[in-house]
Image 1 (cartoon, rainbow, N blue to C red):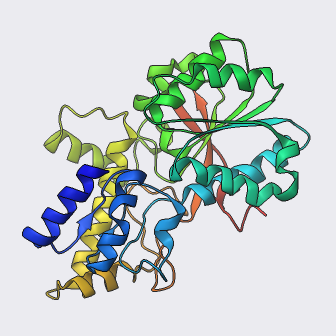
Image 2 (image 1 turned 120 degrees about the vertical axis):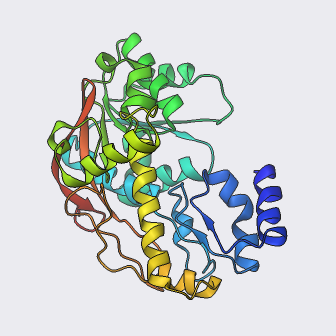
Length: 319
């Protein structure tokens, strides 16, 4: 975060960039959130889904991209209620704004019953080496369901440790960890069988999308520009999709590339079908809606891929 402040100031004040696009991570973006808005520099399509990036009233120069973690957690809560209505649950989350959105989203759904259902809530720090002890603690609580608001490194550890100690809860995992290359392969595909997550982008390992036009275009792009890139890594799919959205915003700006107009067009996207979004998911923004994507589809780990199931869900449609 400290480096982010230093580099953002250099870009804005010395190099006078028009905007920042897709900067990564909740803590780094939190460090420059107020600064970017004070300077009135567009802070666009952040590579973090913290719920606060949609606060158009107080931060009109910042806009997110992917479904917010809080919305995602609300969808998970309603899914768990439907699938395991009487089960005890445990929650592990990263102790920052990213992780706390999972706590708050589940609290939104369960209300006064949260503490009765979630019999164990544990946290970890992003700087921790492992989360093995937290997994053991959750198992010992008797929980039959586990929600993990964790980044891929720790999600892989959670999957592996749960398997190794013989704990087999219904594991609902954050979307940021829904990657074969980043999470499932390090954990061991056989250990991740049945893990549930959500997706809004097409999984490059899903055979159902192998012949779709946008997936073919993406593979051609990868072969030409990133021939050494791992095409099982969903981060490349994400990057291609969000970069295409930035391209569309710039096209909408025409020759008027002022900061004001770039921000105006970023908040003027109507039913845009970005490449590699799941069928039925569209991008919409407005001056009073800074959440471009608000829908997901549930997916289940199956060997070296995720298998989609159910319908496309938004927070509203799960109620």
